[in-house]
Amino acid sequence: MKVTVSRRAHFNAAHRLYRKDWSDEKNTEVFGKCSNPNFHGHNYELIASVTGEINPETGYVIDIKDLKDIIKTEVEDAFDHKNLNVEVPEFKDLNPTAENIVVVIYNKIKKQLASHLELEVTLYETPRNFVSYSGI
Image 1 (cartoon, rainbow, N blue to C red):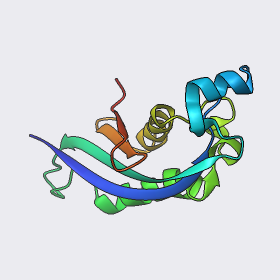
Image 2 (cartoon, helix red, strand yellow):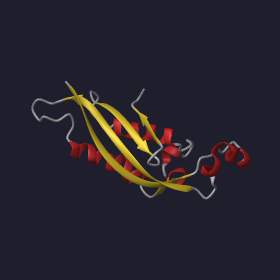
Image 3 (cartoon, rainbow, N blue to C red):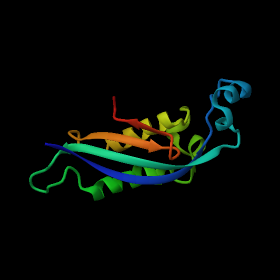
Image 4 (cartoon, one colour):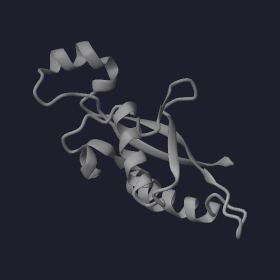
């Protein structure tokens, strides 16, 4: 029997959507106000959901404290109050769209989990705009 355990987290970060190989005009045409050269910020909400078999000894799929610690180290400490374009190495050459951010977060968390556990990450950029990724 598989069960999903979820943990919600939060971080604030700034970013600019743009491609270095495009002109300012083309970036503005494609990304609109999200391509502001002075950046803009979001209050991101994140849900990390881990699915697996219940361990008969502990009754856990994963110790929620372990999941909390992974999220703190891999996401909150790495992204909170940062300019994603400038201060986060994963976005040096990757446009920090919500889609790319959720994949980066997934990869950072997944490498810390036991291989038999499945992961899905949902990232809210705004209360109405969100993306999900499960490695597929």
